[in-house]
Image (cartoon, rainbow, N blue to C red; front, side, top):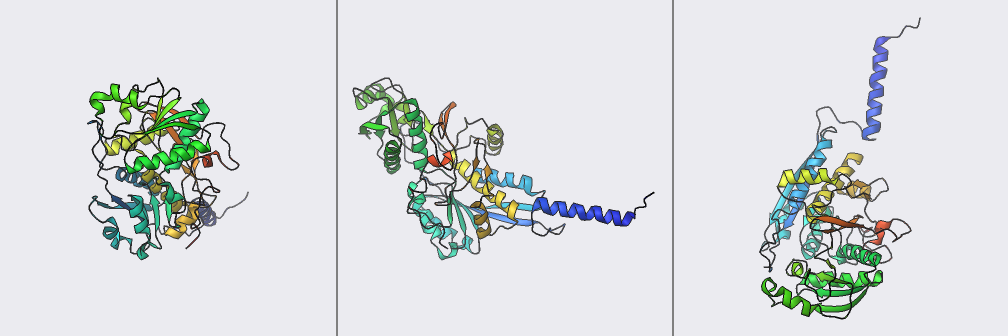
Length: 403
């Protein structure tokens, strides 16, 4: 009979448990039983006052982005409590008339992980501060393509899709449906012009022809005259689809069913490319939608989703590397070990050349998902996700490795 020394056996079993735990949690030393790693994420927002629009039904959530970040914190803490990690969200939210850069300057002392929801010019001013040089920013509020092009910077990553990604998704869809002749209707606001310029670039990229183009009549009252004005505005002998560039939802809803030819409408009205929508239900998205609705009492928007994805990306990095310094988080996010499961049917990763989060783009109408881009048939040598937005040869970004 073999005699086993029980104290030695117990010690061996305990040692095995410790070794296993270290293998699962990571190579860093185990924390003391009562030691909790505190991870603070700063949320910076400059609220945007949107100009009046024609419809009284158009409403924009006042807490857009903020609630997405809050849900990300809750999700991080769901797993963090088992790893003795505690995530907190520090919020600085200012109105349109307040200088968000000045308001945030003191909070940027030290090394910070920051989720931003603000216009591109404010983000550029913020990340250029000396206090921000060792911080890592996640852009969840600006779709400006230039921020992913020559205006990129090493300490700014982007979880919100660029306009180029959105318009590429739309043009892939139009090409696939063989709706190759477009009537482009552009609004009068700066965002509309930017959206239209990206539409033209994407149309050229995916061999879709913009055969007709008109500017919106700013003084038209579509609530009374849509049936009379829209047919005249869209009068032409031939086109397959009307594409609308109207980012504030001023007039786009009145274009549907009022065009000169009976044609579908897409762009910022009709079939719309978005980062996220309450109608996305596949790939487990219903659980994300329900948790967000329970938290905020409303549906999740694209900016909410981008803020949530930014916080979750931080959580994924800190869980793996046990280090919440911006440099360690950034290094892991750009490594081949990182991917984010984000309810879009694909694992999301960051593009090393411009810091954009690769992600599918749903094409939706108010009640359903129509398609998911990248559309089948548009191939890429690395990943089909890089058919959306600026691929490495298309981007003029040369600052991502500068530090």
